[in-house]
Length: 413
Image (cartoon, rainbow, N blue to C red):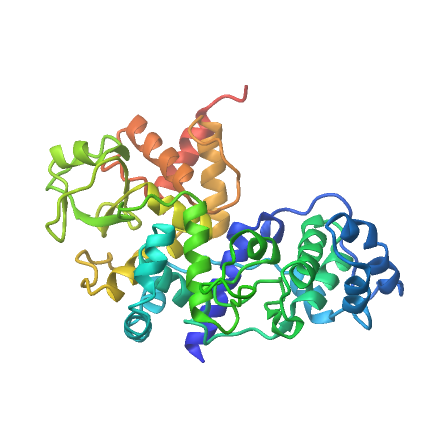
């Protein structure tokens, strides 16, 4: 049960982070409440026919699909809730990269040891990466949501006119039925439309789903190899560089002066930064990532790390996927330890810090309380400008206070 709960929360995180229409600010027309909903749901669906026709959906398929559909009040209510994903990274990793999840991943890797090299040859994505993503998204296919995708998307399209993307996903689900020949009974998933092992929305299914055998419509619900190949295709099309590691855990030299978070791997190596495994650092540009500051584990991230974030724009998710893949591949756990007694900023405090840094000219991103690389770069620049050492890009209550003091002294333009 706990594993399924985590898998579903991770799947929801995919939607919230990678589909802005599910987690962003409301815009345009206000949502329709379930209590005040008019009785013309069917008329709304019928009015979609011209758009479906533009996508070459046959009228018979359209009519048969919407026949008898009724809105799902649970879906309508869920769409008005914004999920929160402020789990401390070390806690997130403890569940996402658990011993059980690792063991299951190794069993899957062994089971498909003949097919995974073929998937890697076709898409350039390591088999362990595809297996790890499959594990995080759906617990290797074991965690399945059972919402009728078409009913869910029809409900969302109707009750959330402020979210036109739901209508687009509904139309794409019709294309799945007609053009791709997907079995209607298979189309089960989350309330927001995420389906199968890869947790694809219909638009993602149309772009990235692939049949491993090539003999039928991609079955990402019951065929693990289709899920794995589809995940690999998604990462490949998102820009995955074959032969390049996602990054690695590193050890910083004593009293390391963090003058920059971005430079080449070779430049970091010249400064005494070493892989904890002893392997040579790769070529290319790197980013130093200190998720708990200079006193916690340290990572150098390659361009492929950001491709993992294309799947889910969360550092917790991307790092969990990368580390799970390493564990599945037989590498040991983290060398660095997490600091004791860490004090984490709340979502509101993070937003406040972003505002302070924006006023001071260091931050130009969205004020959303989600700390990604733009926020870490802004913190690092502020630390350097004020002499705070180490300039590790990590936010603390003291840094929030200091930024607030500096911002208060800055005149309003």
